Image 1 (cartoon, rainbow, N blue to C red):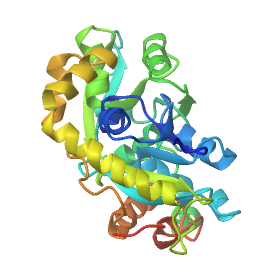
Image 2: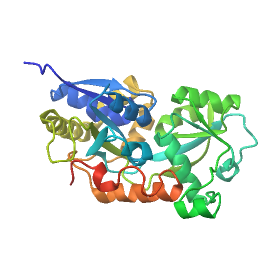
Image 3: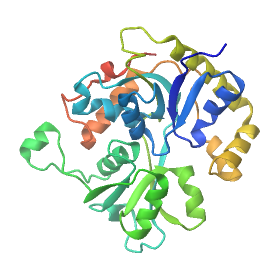
Image 4: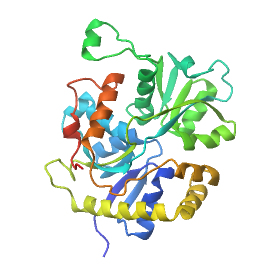
Length: 311
């Protein structure tokens, strides 16, 4: 008998979602899957508004959402409960096909960065890139003491979708953006956009979060979330054992070539046990985001408070 209250799960409809598809198709995942092509930042908003119960998205987006000052007002809306992908994410750095003035990553300092949303992975990684390149300069001594930095870019251009980001770097509305490598590659091959460089996340890339109505950190987890972990584990196992089927799904139902799908499979490792989060990973993410100026010390939630289900 179907559950009268199935979970509403937000996810990004890209190649990383394949084990979720298998979990629903073959292992009875009883959930409404709601795509969020604009990414993790949009899911943060949806969790706080009660439009979804669970989100599967990028680690930096979830941590940034809870580490912001406004997360200390109320309960932040969600907590980290699971680990979906163990490997880092490769973010490709892209510009327009005909932007000869952009010659290298270093030429992007002080330029206009396109992001899907403020607080999204594409936004957060702009600061991580700036930190890696030593572009972050304190605005003044008082700000430096508080951990605040001047923006390394002239503007953050909010564009919502990957399609809009690609358009914007060709029209000049934005100078560059960052998106997952294999999702971007097809548009390099077609000549729509041009690759400038890449940067890897210094943490495991995908986490599972649940609304605080389902996971409040006191040790009680909604039974539907516990079942979700079991179904996702089955989906991940099937994914690993049926790579040809995974490639067929990715190359026919999603926006990837068969060649790119097979190359991606060599780079990704999904968690065999999705339940639980290593707090040390969250601590490392917070440390980098503090250094990059995305988060401010003594604002928002700390790493321990962000995690409701620990490994």
